[in-house]
Length: 200
Image (cartoon, rainbow, N blue to C red):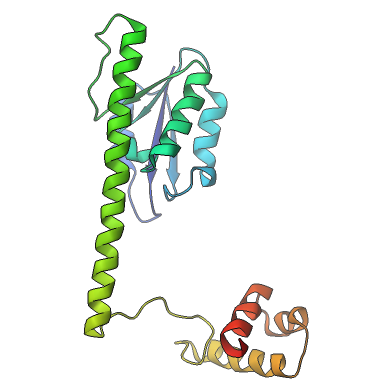
């Protein structure tokens, strides 16, 4: 049986193109996920897929980066698929289905996947490098704002600004983290962050 796996990185992105391609490829069931590709452990639909496949099944994705851009993660996932006796198909890579020798077909497929996983990882590194360069240029121009602090003296929300000052005062009085979190209706980790920033 053919199983499809479709993934986008954020909730505002659309899976329709991948789903259409996987359906046309003959996938009888498609697992859909809107999760970052950063950590393969944080993808419940991928785990479900890996849990149900067995011998002679085929796992299909539109492109290799739908699995991951990390070559190590890709190899781990492919190894898990192979251990189940299943095979793997990437729609935008060359197909070796016409090669009759199974071992040769797997060898050719693995060579292409190794090459493409290296390229995907290299592209991700380049993207991060360009992002860092862009941030540096924006900082040099004084145009980079950075991540806004939710609770702080310059918080955009006046109520959260007031909570920040209340927490700082409570910390200065030596009240417990749990008590401060409870009376201000925030998490303990928020109180700890404010403590580190305000009191060192």
